[in-house]
Image 1 (cartoon, rainbow, N blue to C red):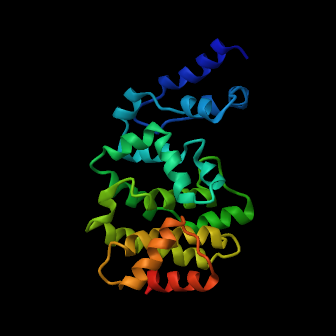
Image 2 (image 1 turned 120 degrees about the vertical axis):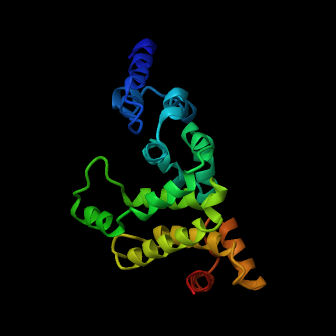
Length: 235
């Protein structure tokens, strides 16, 4: 494929309806995708034209961020919270999201609407359609929420609403442990730790343990520490 043909394929996405979420199909078409020689080239190709970003509703912008082709790169990092920050900084959809006044409300609404049990069922039966979320997407979203991309998420009344949604997802994951591994469940705990650290309900020892848990991107040194973290967050 020539450079001109590849460029034409990518630019065709500009013709999309700005009232819908952004489609990356022209970029991720295998004929186009395999021509990229580096992660940097992929990142550049995945940027959304600014005029489309600005006219997109916040709900469609969030869906666009969820559909970002490089979202799974967080798995390449030992500290996945650092990984998600790299992804956020590499995609202009997140920069636009940070500027939206309703970002916190719509992010929580999106999170509330995720059906953890349905995703588990789809994973078991291999029945998920192209546009449905996967197990990895749940972890991706919880890392985004844990990154403090939108500071107002952690202010009332948003934080209470966020914690209620987080706890529901956590419980649903535990009830579907045949699909949701400990690594996936830890994303809910990482988000819970970030929320709990904004609370006045924890003592200095608990705060220190949760702070270390966050610094390590949701990891712990021992299983005993994992139990302690879980008890603090869910008490």
